[in-house]
Length: 293
Image (cartoon, rainbow, N blue to C red; front, top):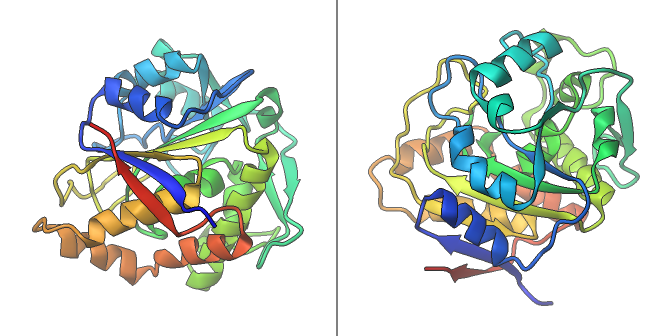
């Protein structure tokens, strides 16, 4: 079986993001959703819209986001839209909150290990393809955040986020979200990610940007500053291979902050999301890393 191709460049520029899309030789056609993390209010590490401007224009895309399931500046559509404007997203791009209005769209997961459906914003039906544009970093719950998290928690509606966190409990509560079986939560993320991949049926591409490498997510209003130096940009048509390659770059790093980042991944058993996703068969952990100048 041919290894998945993962492309890598050390150059961290807006132009390089476009180049890393171009090397995939994948034309995202029709109406293109560009999934980003817009950043929680107060977060200093999220990737700014100006950095994304060239790639969004290259694919003629619409920025898409979903509301959160926890208190903050993004848990209602009105607050979230205000923050999208404050952070500059809606100033530069067309922006669509996929779950701004209900009802949610339900994606079935017939082979899911712990959940058999995924709740996403109904506006996903407006799009023919998706570019998953991820800021790779650590995460308090997932251990790390990359393409698989963007596909799962990122695309899930507000209700869907709670449903994934609480491993399929329709009547989930905020307190329960952070007191569940960790491996089951990671498996639920893998299940839900698979449903989005299947929904777009090959009309999807992935870019992970490894900079501002904090152990905390962009969803944290108060996040640790980056603990490692920037690494670069990776792209692939395989989200599992892409995340595995990013994790491997962290583990193989000689940066003085490497151990702190690895501790966060291992504390939350973050690699298990990749393991679970691989078993579902929508990608491979076996990859060829191809460096691009």
